[in-house]
Length: 417
Image: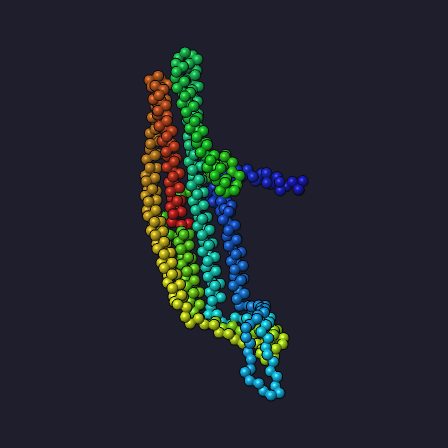
């Protein structure tokens, strides 16, 4: 029995998700399912490998070199001494060496490369964060579309129920000969039209739920209950958009690249050791193969490179100014969006206040129309007109309420969560 316990728990637990879904859960599922999440892991691994390569700059570098050459002339002694045989060097020469180099001082170039790599990694990671932020906006939009379609479904179902109830009464009157059959036909036509509208709403919700399932990677049934989130209360204007953070990281990366460029004009000191075997060895007068070695310090200092470093830093300054301009433009456009969204929130709040009164009036008018229809003093067309007006008023009321909540949440999205 114990082996079946996990399966039973899974069977009982699975309908819980199938019955209800919140906006926060949908956004969390979508973030976890987003393919670019794998890119974040790849970026971390790439950076780790690149830093490993950069750290090798502090380690000894070992090279194996070989050379065979033939030269047109060799060094000779232009004098002859009696009893002294000065050998003539061969024009073919050979050497094989093992060279070991150890960096001692590079002006901070290696450390600068490491810092630049880390800055570039943060920039790339923030780009992924910007894309995931856009995903959250998309999920929220689809989620609220599904909520709106759900309200349409409820309103159409209520209207269908009332039309069916009225149809049963009229059908009894037709059977008794007190009501014309054309009145029943009018109601049946209205019932079919409302059924079409219901099907359209159900199709719209189905498409929205399927899109949510695609974005979240979850098997979400069409019957899922979507919880209406509470409205956001904070409407401060402080911007916390990930794009602004991205611009700042791009600035940091350019500054770090400028510091790295400055290290190119600094001297570099390294120690070296060379062991070799060749013909001739270090003694050029011995025309034979021999082992040799040498060791010492080496200084490299570029004194003139035609202002290359100066030009490179000027280019980086221009790029920094360009990024700064992009950041300022983005902040300006975002603040303009906040003003427009604030106005939209206010308009929807005013509409909601009127909706309650409109629905109340439409319901009273429809009730009177229904009574007059029963008493034979009102035509079926007039009754259906009042019934449709009430249904539209209810749909408008619920639509404005959902749109108002969406508008307050979208204000937070524009500002930055």
